[in-house]
Length: 104
Image 1 (cartoon, rainbow, N blue to C red):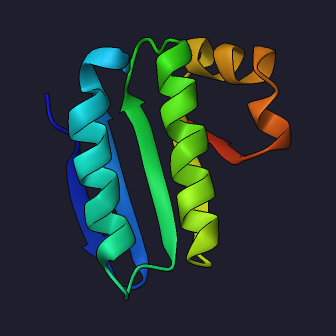
Image 2 (cartoon, helix red, strand yellow):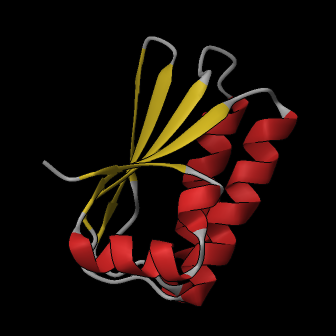
């Protein structure tokens, strides 16, 4: 399912639904571009509340978005991360590269 994009003030949120893997690549890129192209957006939040699983291609997509956001002076935050997703982020050392907010 395509990510849901919402903009409130200077915060753009991309809500992911379902497994975050290579199958989501095209839709993730389009949703990311929508937030990157919006001049009002200064912070990009990627919402993992509905994500039970992610794979290594998802990690690559997040790294690329972070790089592109930083080049436009936008910040990026990973929010509503459940335990399984947090474990993947920890193994990949994403906790050192991203601001991560757990669910709840």
